[in-house]
Image (cartoon, rainbow, N blue to C red; front, side, top):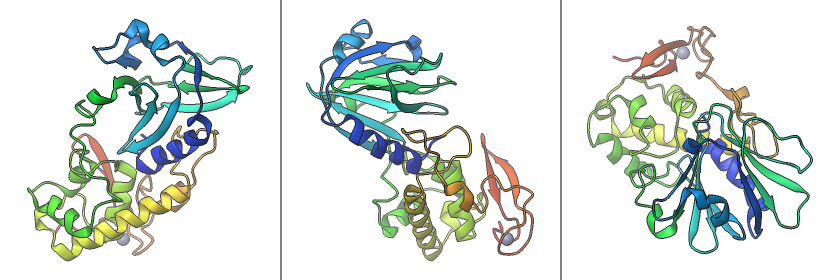
Length: 279
Ligand SMILES: [Zn+2]
């Protein structure tokens, strides 16, 4: 699933394409589950509501994309597993999984939202309703915006396994499996360590690794380990620098022990059993 650096890359790719442009027409090819419209608006009106609106800005919050439209509406997009945007010539044959087609005024291209697995969501809300919605209202702070002090306080709030804490979007928003495993590897922390058992100094170190890794991954346009690509179809290149995630059975770069993959909750964790000890 795209995480903070991948979603940030998509947002940066969308801005020059969309901001300032007017939506000439929208074609909805999606099943009803993929497109959600606020109860105060109407789903049957989705195409009509979108048409003629100007895109005024695009922001990221956690793994969410927020496309601001004129008339106080926001198109809120979550890519989930395989959702992605492509910017293609209008003549490009329509794919079965192209769920939404944006026909922008004054361009020879379409912006298309394609989603093979169909877990992605496009939601249209009035701005005054947006931040009360589940999925946004409970989001924790952005990992690139909090201080080490604040991060330590979040972790020390209650005891839980550090890996699960990092994945909890209500604690901190934007980190997923890849960047959690990589950060814990660099900080030499076992994914099952309890947050409250980690000293302030260790958590400060982890905070530093999280920020460094996320910034580097953004510079490299994210990690393409599955289907993720940017808006222009370009893959990210952070996958060449992964030390733990996806490396099970490979030797740890520091000590040579084999990286293991272990189930924790509903997710798997990759770590070095020698460098990242539980006790
Ligand atoms: Zn090791």
